[in-house]
Image (tube, rainbow, N blue to C red; front, side, top):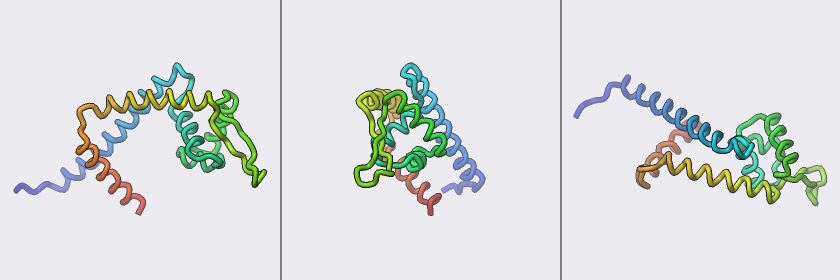
Length: 149
C-alpha cells in the first residue's frame, strides 16, 4: 500500500477549500443574476428569510443570523420596509421590542427566490447521489466542529 506524502494531503486540503469557496461564490453569483430582474440580491433574500425564521428578532440578531454587520442589516430592513416586504410593529408584552414580519408581497418574493435557488441547486448537484451528499455533509460537519471546538 502506497503511503501518501504529507505535502500531497496538505495540498489536497487547500484545493478542497478553494473549490468549496469557488462553488459558493459561483452559486451566489448565479443566484444574484437570477434575482436581478426581481430587484433584490441574495443577501436581501437571506434577510427576508431570517425575518420569516426568527419572528421578533432584533436587527442585531438578524444581522448575526445573516452574517452581516448591524449597519448592513439596518439598510436591508429599511429597504424591505419601504418596498412593503416587511412590516414593523411593537411587541404586545414589551412595547420597546420591535417585531418584524413578512407581508404577503415579502412572502411571495421569498417563495420566488426559493424556487430560483432550488433550480440552481439542482444544477449544482446534478449526477450526485444521496450517498455522496451524505458523505460530503458528514465531512463538512466534522470540519465545522473542528473550527468551532
